[in-house]
Length: 385
Image 1 (cartoon, helix red, strand yellow):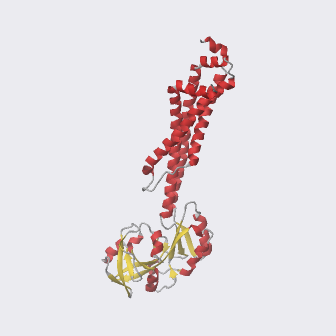
Image 2: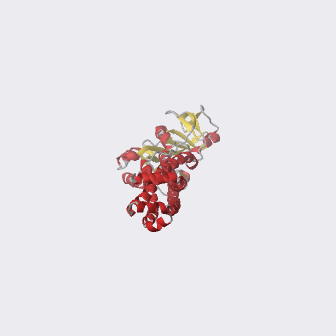
Image 3: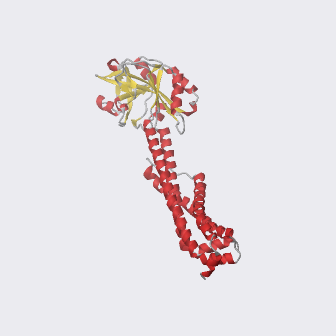
């Protein structure tokens, strides 16, 4: 009979204590895997939203004496006079070092127009790029062609227009092809036309008022991209508009630190459970250990038997703990992540790490009981017979 056979036999004879040790390590590993899996899934979810959230870099002309704004763009007070950027200069954005992280560039021309008896702000945009820059837009109707326009919800209400109406903007007649559902932003009060159409109406061919950039941001350096774009467009102000997502990431970092703290505490409690239980088991097995020593077993053999028992239980607890934590994370992730797109991916590093962690904690907790068992005097142990 090998030492491994003796260890397995002992575990079978003392199922209750073995299950108690197993439960302690299982809870610890399960908690660690659950918390780390949730943090990982939530980070991926936020990174995905960051990529899909639309514009995160804003390019506006450098100007002064500002009073009216649109998304950080100054409109120059009552006269709406403002500087502009040459549309052709936007092409230089594709030359920056991190150009691969740019998903879309959306130029926009802004200017006041007269519709009927009312003044309204018109925006000329690239609707294809705006599909990525404004993924939350919902249009009742369809996107306009060269002679069409869509209205923000508030603008449509104020002008009394709806889909299908024709309207004269300055001296050009356009057809309303759609109305935006309320967005809760300044888009609600605008009239949108294709960029070239708006430039023609406003008499600003080849010029834009601002541009929005959507960057693929899973690990992309937004501050560096802002600097690179600023170097390419010295006449423009380039700003990052990722405060909301950044705030969420900081909150998640705090949650991650909290998770590590809770995991460490749970593991400490689990290791103490293993230590106390195995010490009690060693005391109960005094006679058995004395017989082993009388039969010629060395102290190292006794230690190896105890540590083998701890290793077997720890290995099983590591596997079950990972499966339990992974399953619990899949069940709980909808309650922690916004939307329904969050998933808990299989992480082989976390799986292997959880098993190694369980083995480490189990063996560490079993060293003292094993040492205590090895130091038992066989003569005193046999007197108990």
